[in-house]
Amino acid sequence: MTRKLAALAVAAALVLTPSLGMAQSGQSKAPAQKTAQTPALKVGKDEKVCRYRFPSGELRTWVCKKEQPCCAWDLISYVKCGSTITGCL
Image (cartoon, rainbow, N blue to C red; front, side, top):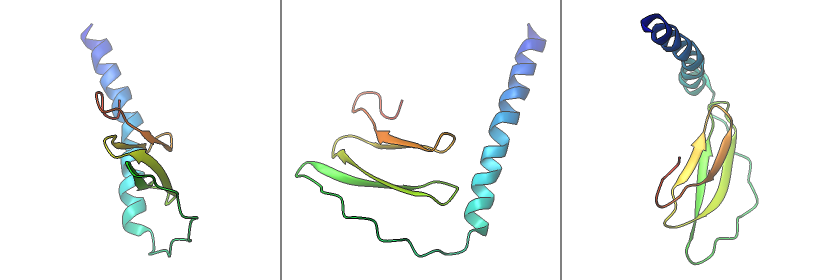
């Protein structure tokens, strides 16, 4: 049982380590880039604009309701509006 847990911990560490290294190195070595003008998003009365830059340099912009959190996942390059109850789960 202990060996299985140790193997699982090592596997998890190997999976997560390269993505963390890429995120740190990508942010520190990336030259300052001028962002291209994206089309203006139509934002309603109870909405907000969410923006997130992935470690690869890609910038995503989307609209959520004001009470919802802006959620982004680096590993799968995915963004969405979260839930007021569960957050970004």
